[in-house]
Length: 72
Image (cartoon, rainbow, N blue to C red; front, side, top):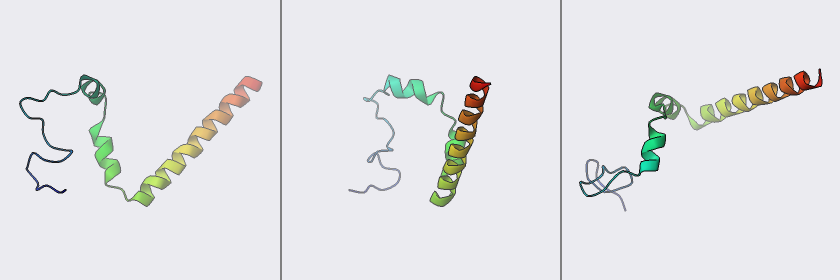
């Protein structure tokens, strides 16, 4: 089921006057940097995957450095 842009149907529809926002979503939403989300969504899936691989490598470097410090 598709909806036209600007209509109140679909998952991204604005809340109606009778709906209230979920307090949990609202609490977490304040801490979300939307500029980072937009920046990431401009990337291709391949670019996002390469960024994830780079992040995983960095995390492993940090773990290894931590293990070396503990052993020293």
